[in-house]
Length: 290
Image 1 (spheres, rainbow, N blue to C red):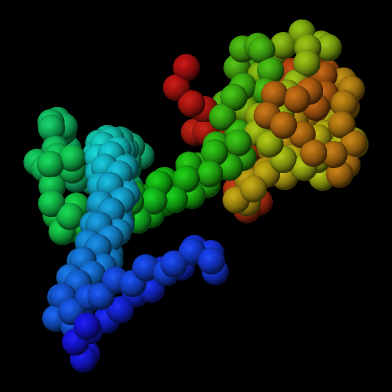
Image 2 (tube, rainbow, N blue to C red):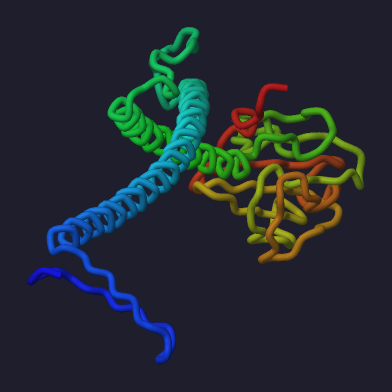
């Protein structure tokens, strides 16, 4: 044994001679170095393998997410493309209805055709621009439809309040305007029209309104007066029987009374008047065609 060498003594039992192994210092140093290098390589390899495994798992997860996002993006593009087509069709209908309603005097020819840019083939920036345009178009169509709704709501109210149907089935026996009075023979102004019909025939309201008078009045006999919107009112005179009460709301076509000859009348007929702000108007002007 030389100075500086390493000695390993192995003893199994106390009575058994011990064995001694001597290792030169250089050999021990070499073994230690090799062991250190081997352990270091093993540790580094394990760390590298762990990092690679982790990156591979992360890559697989990201790839799955990308695939899902790609599918969702494609679905979104297709849905946006369908929305664009529906919105374009709705815009055409809105414009046509606007023209037909008289709100727009400009004519329109045939419209339609495929879209200039399919949303499913656009880039992300192009898709963003298209969606911004769709939002602007949507607000425009919404405004047009709101205007049309207001127009047709007002129009329906106006039509409901316009006395545009015959009040009774019969034939005209006296027109609106100046005539010879049937009792005196003197030229006089007739503020309505007379419609001859059998006594007891039903008389209906010619528009929606409120009954404001339902009793006898000099000259008219039994009279019903209905107040409508927009300053319009109608009068139904010479009735045999009144079928409404003051304050009662009536709809167009509701029975308000029955034909008679009460008051200043030569026979059973209905005296029918239409007034605008209290001024008599020719009822025939309000009749719709047919």
